[in-house]
Length: 79
Image (cartoon, rainbow, N blue to C red; front, side, top):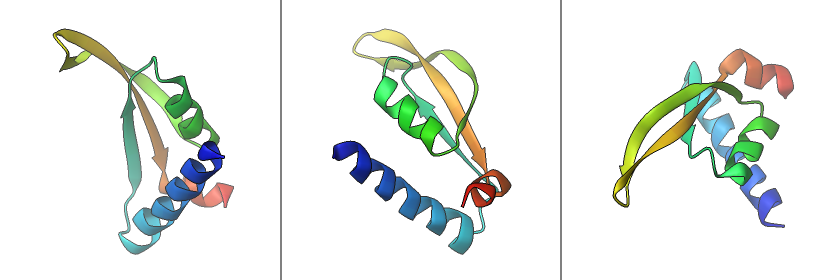
């Protein structure tokens, strides 16, 4: 149920970002250990663009981040 809510929430904002704000692309940085967020982004059409090593300092240690991205034309092709 929460996953469905998260998906609907994200779709609403993608429509706003791409249509109303005329953005060309959206990028998301995610903790690689957060499989739920990674899965949601993949389901929405985001592509893994790379791993940024030691990108963020949190709780006394450096953590990696996956970089995901989606372009406007990829989003509209899915709609």
